[in-house]
Amino acid sequence: MKNTIIVITLCLFTFGINVKAQSTIETVLIEVARNNKAILANTQFYETQKLQYRIGLTPNNPTVEYDYLFGSPVGTGNQTDLTVAQSFDFPTTYIKKNQLANQQIILAEFQLTSKRQNVLLDAKKVCIELVYLNKLQIQIAQLKQNTQKLLSNFQTKLNIGEGNILEVNRAQLQLIEIKKQFQENTSAIAQLNQQLTSLNGGNQIIFTDTIYPLLPNIPSFEQLENEYENADPLRKSLLQERLISQKQMEVSIAMWLPKIEAGYHYQGILGQTYSGIHTGFSIPLWGNRNTVKFQKSKMLFADLELQNHRNEHYYEIKQLYEKYINLKITLIEYQTIFDTLNNSALLSKAFSLGQISTIEYFMETNYYSTAFKNYLQTEKDYYHAIAELYKYQL
Image 1 (tube, rainbow, N blue to C red):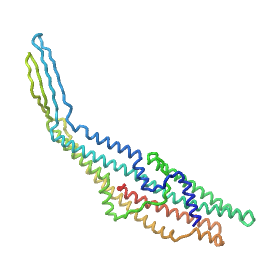
Image 2 (image 1 turned 180 degrees about the horizontal axis):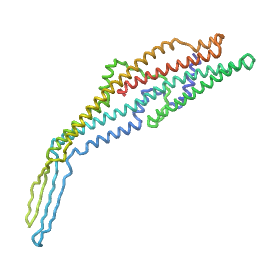
Image 3 (image 1 turned 30 degrees about the vertical axis):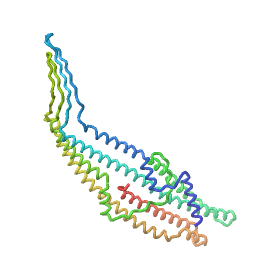
């Protein structure tokens, strides 16, 4: 037990020496949400869109027209005309445009949430992968230490004439394979930490945790699927796009109403002046032709997109849930065995008593290591599935 603690400490020190404080998955996600460049860019884009959607909600700029006309023949007098006018859409049009802008802003918020969830899910899955590799590194380090000790014993016996060169060779080959695994795992850990640092906007994170996040109380598939769909920003975006198409159609209908122009008109001619009210209106004959049909077509497209998403998403969640159930069954079986199994100690004792040969010892050790790695892999896949099922909460 003491040796195991020492190995764990050394192993964590090896690939976690730059860590200022122990990070958990929750703290990493908080950091990524604050520092990720894509999230920051999309947040700024969202603010830009809110301003963009507010453009055009006010009347057009007023116009000023001035004419000075020279009379002919000379002496007949000159003419002066001045018109100051302001054009307006029909009043209900501004109401419809404001309603449309508000719905477009809500859509932009849903899109921002969806992009944020994608980034945080990527970060969470990287952390889960690192938990798996960190736990695997401890196992490999312990196996490496045991093999080095065994090789040293074989070498000592050989030096005093009691050993077998074949045993030394087997132990050396075994150690080379274990060192290779250790280096490959170390490299994989470093690469994932770099990926995590990239997701954190370039701010370094070295994740050394070997503990998975606490599991939520996972309900039945029907309840989980309903909760997911109700919170899913992509589904909300599709619903919002349909609502926006409806609002755009209402704006298009309102644009068929006449535009109004009102202002002041002054005219001076032959020493006489005239001034008064200037009014006018547009006749909407063909300027908005087919716009209502176009928006109705967009609404139909949005309905079909929503139905397609609902169907695809249902079976996507169903597959994930079934994967989670199957992994849970396998994981429980693994845990039941490994919680009571002390194969390493039993193998060492059998080998020291001469009950098994060197080849049998290494074969059994490799078999046990492979089984334990598969157990860790199953555990990782299990938490990956749960992370995807609860993406909507990120």
